[in-house]
Amino acid sequence: MKNLKITLSLLILICITSCDDFLSEKPDNRTEIDTPAKISELLVEAYPQMSYFEIAETMSDNVFDSGMQETLANNEQNYNWLIQTETTNIDTQAYYWDACYKAIAHANKALQAIDELGNPSSLNPQKGEALIARAYSHFMLVSLWSKRYNPATATSDLGVPYVTKPETELLTKYKRNTVAEVFDFIEKDIEEGLKYVTNDYKEPRFHFNVNASKAFASRFYLVKGDWDKVIELSDDLGSRPEGKLRDFSTYESIGVEDQQLKYASSNVETNLLIVSTNSIVSRVYSLNRFNLSGTGRPEIFGGNTNLFGKAYYYNFYSSNGSITLFLPKFYEYFKYSNVTAGIGDPYVAEVLLSNDEFFLNRIEAHVMKGQIDLANDELEYFLATRTPTYDSTTDKLSEARVVEKFPVVQDEYTPFYTMTPVQTSYVKAIAETRRRDFIHEGLRWFDIKRFNIVVKHETSNKPANILVKDDNRRALQIPLHASSTGVELNPR
Image (tube, rainbow, N blue to C red; front, side, top):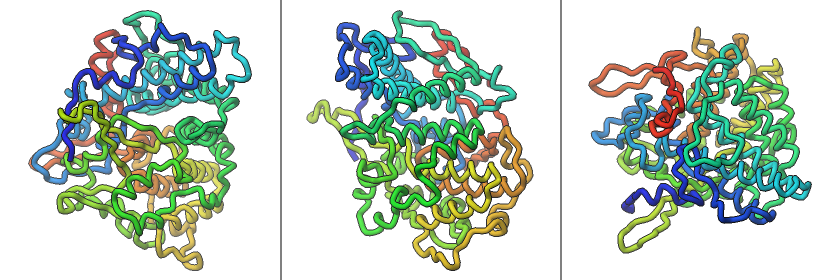
């Protein structure tokens, strides 16, 4: 394992100026953004280049106390839903906050440049990408730092500042929009951006291409409860997206490092949006005490969780005798700035959007529309791609099988909308499927929030820490450097 030395200078490598504002860093005023090529170059930076995976994953019920004696401070604080004391390291809450607003600043600068050039139709692809990118970063911010979306309370719940203009002052004062306002802004940007996004890129999977934009929009509308939109957006996938989902069988015959490289490869059909993040997420499985553990694995991946009652394709590895486990998803590239001193930056390619998530969103929408037969067919198709011994003649999904395997537990799943008992069983089955498929990637946390699931974190020799329904800790606390400049703190 290479040593990682982090200095303050490393924290600003993804910026293109030295503005100290907590929300973003302005693009260089000395450079005129006056050509399509320059706008496209600017948009390369319109994606958060820090990772939220370890933050969200550790807050979820995917992690357990492995019993290791030592751990990173951030890991223990995430596990206990505390604001982090580390604010100058990568993979921290404050760093991801900043990364999102830096990405937003680049999107806004691109939109301003397009406007100043007269909004020509030739720049519509860049305009669409900028709008979707701006919506995505704001969505991630409101999903982490605000209460869950609930239309009954959204007009009063604290959201995040929705920034739509490039900054003109060194220290701009920002007021938090409500959750309702943030969602309205996001929806407006999504609807406008979808009109213009394109696939015309040399490397489309590193941009908000058409399918990546639709997949993100489906995640947004799933949270909002607009099932028709989710289904409409996923029509191109259909009910049997052959060749478009991750083929886990191809991982069986290759080594761990090759699996890590393959998972986030631009050649893998399911990967819709890939971002290179400044992160040590590939290392945490040997450093973090609170992680997927050997004792906790059966709860999520045991054969009893499979609707066919069979083993999964998922193969786990360990560097410490199965005390903690990892699924090979992240390959680290260490970029040296000084080889002799061993100083540099770790980068990891992360899949932010995929057809796998997109398809599961579609299945959930069918359930909520009461289309159970269609949901059976689609969920069976998805699970077959994760079950090596699937038999199409005997492994058939039915309402009775889903209800038996995932019975309704009183007040376990409580979204803002109502569900019938049958819908509850199916939604739980889909959520558990999503939980497995995106292990280590943090998506489970967002299901915990929107379904208001209780989480119990146990630490040896300490009382259990329970995240109850509507617990204020479900919204991350605003970073200290942001609150010190006037951004209102979340209640605690």
